[in-house]
Amino acid sequence: MKFAQTILNPAAKWAWKHKLRLAALLAAFAITAPTALHAQLPSPCCALLQIGLQTINTTIKNVVGGGLNKILGVDQQIQQFEQSVIFPLSQIQQAIGTVKGLQGGAGQIRSISQVNIASATLPVSQQLEGVLLSRNPNQIGQTGSNYTALYGAVPSPTDASPAIRNVVDMNDAVAQAAMKRSIEIDALADKEIQAADQIDQGIRTAAAGSVPILEAQASAWVLRSQAYTQTAVAELMRVRSISLANSSVDVKTGANSSTALRQALQNLLQHQ
Amino acid sequence: MSAITYFAAFGVLAWLVFSLRSRKAIAATLAVAIIAGALAFPPESEAQGGILGVAQQIVSLINGVIGNALTAVNTARSAINSYRQLTLFPQNLLNAARSQIVGMIRQDRQVMGNIFTLNLSSASLPMPQNLETQMRGRQISAIGGISQMFVGTFGAVPALGDAKPTSRALSDVDDALAQDSLKSAVASDSASDLELQQADSIEDAASSSAPGSAPFLTAAALSTTVRSQALMQKMYAAELRQEAAQLAHENVLKKEGASSATALRQALQGLLQHN
Image (cartoon, rainbow over all chains, first blue to last red; front, side, top):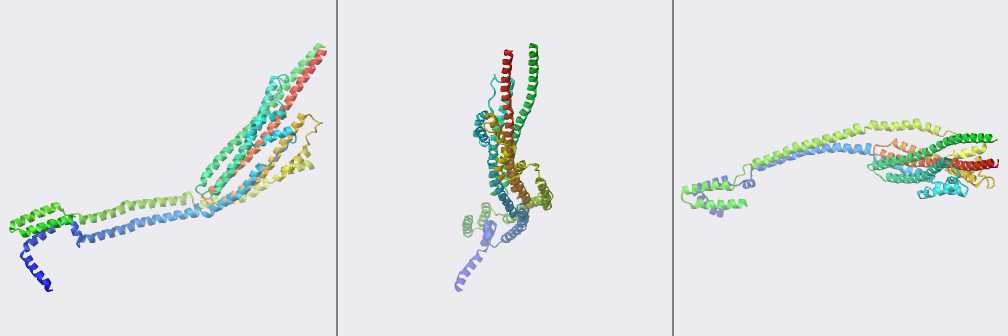
């Protein structure tokens, strides 16, 4: 205490003596001191800052938090709707189960499509039948020789008129083409059955979002398959058209033969 | 750093104020120091107003841009939710679709099944009856017996001494392709039964499906359609073989007719020459 008095008393006397100069210096300090210094001192600025931060906090809670909560609520509704109405897991699994159940039937259909139906008993017809039922496009080249071996070749020019030879050649050509087409169609049908099996396999492991992709692929295969069916029908139409034309040829040939016969008989009578 | 510089400068000022004797000199020094200080260390007069201003700007930003954006997002999400629940996937229409399937199953399946399984057999004699039973039996296991029944009904290929080799071959291939088609028809019937079962399964599953699970069934139905088309093509292939054989057979008759006509013409010419 005495020590303090020994220091403070002279200081107070000195300060009193230079009070004007000290006042001037304090005034100068108050005027010129930078803000940073004020901030470190107890200041109304801190209170204002606190109020500002509290306002920001409240605003974030109310505006941002409240807004996000509303969005969360809507999103939860959407999620609930998606999971229970649009993409319910149980029904997706049930659908996949149904697709798996179809697998057995598909396997049976594949076996049925490959069942042996060959029925010919003689070597020549067996050979042709073997090629026709082969379902192998590589054997299409053998159709012509096997066909000729069984049904014979186009008559030579000395054996038939050019008109008859043309008709016979056309008939053979269309019949052979139809037989070749049947091999081609069988082979394509086998490929389609394989494709259907592959698509089924894909469906069994697909997700609800990826299934429409396989659906699109399957639709493309249906379209492709329809095109092949149309081709087969077109081939059938050609065969039937040529058959109809043959009926017409028979009428024409009959008429010509009658005329020739009448003339021959007239000649014969004139000779007698 | 700015505070150290300020206090150093203020120390120099204090030394000058206490060193100088003349009041005028002190006043002049203070005046110069205040002006210099004001210039060197300008008071950040906006500091207090700046904090409040920044806080107000943040609050305005939250209330304005962020608040409006969140409201807009919420509005949009609510609209999407309503659109999905009320327009795209209304529960009542989903249930109506399922009910329609159930109703159609009850209404049509049994009736169509009854129509489809009507007995079409018409043969009256034992052998044709056997063949008819086999070829309409829809049993893949019956295919093996068709040839025997066919021969029993339509006869066998003539024996070696009973017909020309060409005629025998022709008869054999005609019979063979006719039997092939009959067997293919049995196979197709059998496959049709499986396809009908598959269609029933898919329809049953569709009656309890959801919008998200139905595409599985659609895809399965499409792949089954591909398979069905393939079998249809095989039927057409059999039909093509049969029609081609028919045409080829008629053509053989034409070839033989041409040969016979040539032979007849030559015979007549010979006869006329003799006369």
